[in-house]
Length: 245
Image 1 (spheres, rainbow, N blue to C red):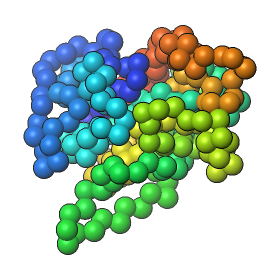
Image 2: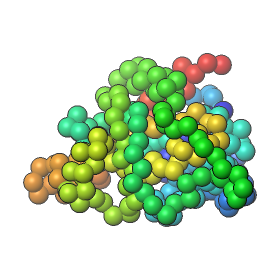
Image 3: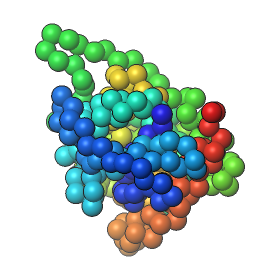
Image 4: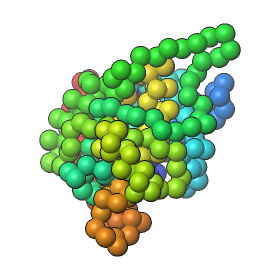
């Protein structure tokens, strides 16, 4: 069973034939919003808006553990996590899609693990994203004709504020090619629960200090979200259409 986690700009999955909503209780509380069970391109899919209905949850307020555990309880074994990011690398023009292959976690104070007292989970996060899912997403982007940057490093920052230019300089020195606020601990928790997980990132703006002088980041985000999310939907449609029965 495939789940799509929607980020900024993807509060609902257009084209999903809604069958039922489910708001499960987990040992870590309730997920951000009811899980939407439905069919997309004729295939069963579960959709979860990461920031809740109406985009009410800031990145550091999201109950990542409840989200991932609720999806696992629902029978999900694959997750495509859609995320809006700022492009650090020059190829990541606003509206461009990317498939990061690595992540660096700069967040703090978030519940990072399902470990309980007396039970320590040492998840291997050498390769944080499922290569099988990444390969299928690459193929889907090719079929959909969507520009895609394959690879790169996602820098996960705390938010909800955007970064300073100096912070983006540091991220670039560390090897980050894009910056977002929700990539961790989501990826690590999915690994702890044994779920295949990949991030389909949408560059919606140039990261701080990387755009044209005087360019408004918020204006860039607003202008790029519609185009970028249309490409995301096209890739998801191609991905699901090509999925093995």
